[in-house]
Amino acid sequence: MPLSKRNKVLVVGMDGLRFDRLRALGAPVLDGLMSSGAYGTSKLPYGEAGTPRTESPGEIVPKSPESGGRVIASRTDSGPGWSSIATGVWPDKHGVVDNAFTNPNFTKFPDFLTRAKNVRPELTTAAFFSWTSLDEHGAFSRAIDHRFVVDGYGMGLWAEADLQVAEAAERHLADADADAVFVYLGDTDEVAHDLGPHCPEYFAALQTQDAYLGRLLDAVRGRSTYPGERWTVLVTTDHGHVDEGGHGGTSDEERTVFVIANRLGEDLGGRSLSGPRLVDVGPTALGVLGIAADPAWELDGTDLFINC
Ligand SMILES: [Zn+2]
Image 1 (cartoon, rainbow, N blue to C red):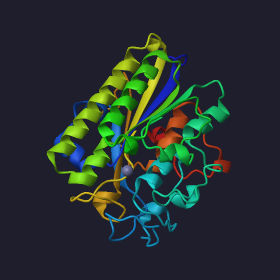
Image 2 (cartoon, rainbow, N blue to C red):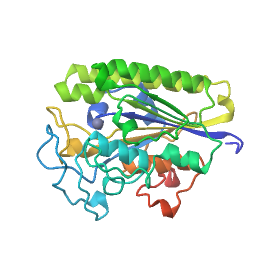
Image 3 (cartoon, rainbow, N blue to C red):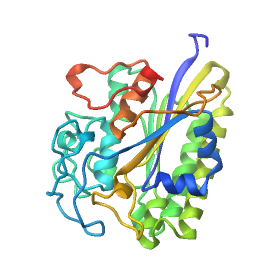
Image 4 (cartoon, rainbow, N blue to C red):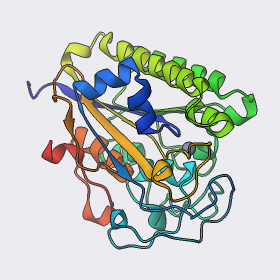
């Protein structure tokens, strides 16, 4: 690989996507990224026992080997999950323990796009998402160059929000001087809350999001500058769901998450990543951009490609 190629990274998040359901149902684009990439699962080091369908501050805490011996008081909700993906640290550091975002600490622990921009101001960063809480509370900061935020709750139909997010991201990836991009798709979570992850509608939402992912990858491959670029694609989720729908608790179904890593045009052989964690996503994206984590950042995650 010529060193002159410009490294770029696309991170795609699919909310509430259960990996076992993905494997059972199949999704052509995600399956392709796995077979030519590297992937694995891990369990979130937090969760509140027994209340997957309720909202609460998250006070009951399991001590788990995944937490590295720390006690992390948090529900397996979207707020803690996306904040961990964004920042590379767990909820006891970034402060988001449920969907209330009561006491976030994004000043000390900013998102990976903001860190990338701080270290390499010449980079162009972008984030596209439909959950406004991630904007209002600063999980993805306003220092990001291009921000496309629509209100999935306000629209009442998350599938429509996903469509708008996907189309905006597709345009950006096709035409812009994009270096680091985050895209969030949320209908899988919405459907699972309503009907559970075993219904036909969950399959349909997965296929739709998979097709959007395919359009994003086509946009990348169609860039006029693509021959001089080396794109890394990371796909992840923030939590799972219990069989009847809902999350927040400690079951394996809620705590199991995945990370898929792929380098477009290179074959990583579908190998296993050893327990990739949500906190590894940000450091991996930064590593792609040639940015090594500063110990002063106190990140919990590591670059998945160091041993890959
Ligand atoms: Zn979620």
